[in-house]
Length: 287
Image 1 (cartoon, rainbow, N blue to C red):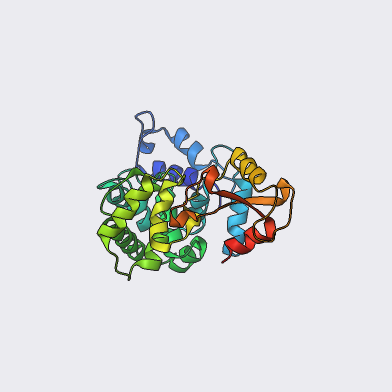
Image 2: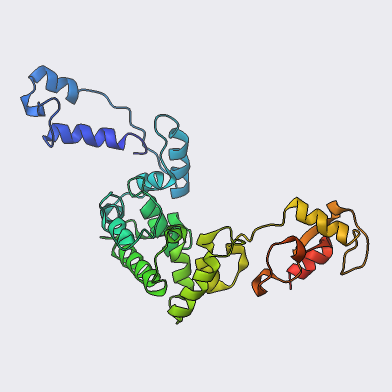
């Protein structure tokens, strides 16, 4: 069943006597009232197809009312004992995953109620291929593998980065854990580097500091860009000439570059700005 699962289950639970409605259980109803419920016709569609086809169908019919998230749609397709156990651990406001990730400072910025914790853990453990993992484990008795993995990720993050900062809740910890879990780090040295970068006004994405200190890739930091005024000042100072190829260009044909690289202490200031032609800037950046 693709749609109406919650409705159908609720009707069955009411008839089974699991809850009352307006202080009346099913067995308290008159025979006429019971028959109205038992004889009520439900429109049910039986569909066969691949997992991808079932996901596509569910997205098509999910057009009314409150829209389901991608993970809620996946949950509707990959039902079974594995999912039931996974939801106990990842899908309640007081679930174990939420409590663990918030003990000592929030490490995951997500809502367990809308299945975001479960989605995050699944994305981490299988490199973003969530449907593949759920399909493989759908009929497992429990989700212990996923739960243990999540615990390992959180424990590793707190061990490597001992000084909590709020920016840590936006870090993809699973991706870093998968790459660096077996590598040894000087925790004190990492903290000193993080402390310095946190104070650097050129670093506009502070959460990117954590993957940066492990990978050395500046793409995580979103280094502050040169302003149009800085670019114009450098262009006029150079008379429009690229210092690499020595040719003169229009400013629209040039790009700003740090004379002294940011990684070596060069700030994003007018004095440290030079204009290079597009080809030379791309060549320089690729080295």
